[in-house]
Amino acid sequence: MKKLWEEFKAFAFKGNVLDLAVGMIIGSAFTAVVNAVVGAILQPILGLFTENVKLEDMTIGKFPIGTLLQAVIVFIITAIILFLIIKAISKAMSLKKKEPEPAKEPPRLCPFCFQEIHKDATRCPHCTSDLTGK
Ligand SMILES: [Zn+2]
Image 1 (spheres, rainbow, N blue to C red):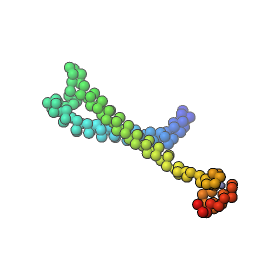
Image 2 (cartoon, protein in one colour):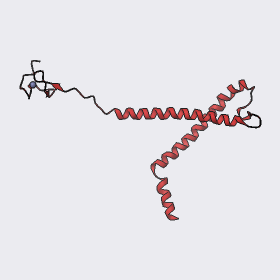
Image 3 (spheres, helix red, strand yellow):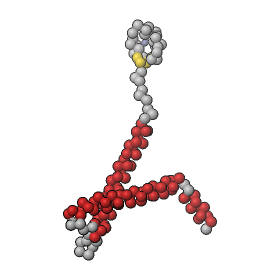
């Protein structure tokens, strides 16, 4: 039993589990916000078409589809926003990765023998031509 507790501690205090917990807390808070927005904005709009029937009270026969409909709408909105956030994060990360790559200058070539030479050279090390007059 003690071994199990040790294993649990090792699992629970790993960084990624804490990240996951934070993500879940933020996610559920986020869902609550979306829920409230859907309730506050969508319900009155829907009420225009359904003669002020509340979304929760909507039924088809005996089936209360209103609650299900609201859950589906909340899910879709949450999924779209999360998708956009993840897309933005991955884009920002890929931009960061590409940044430390300075543009490489093309090598300077001797105008006489066309060998590669140092950019500040005044005399070609290959054919000994004077490069200052150029
Ligand atoms: Zn040369």
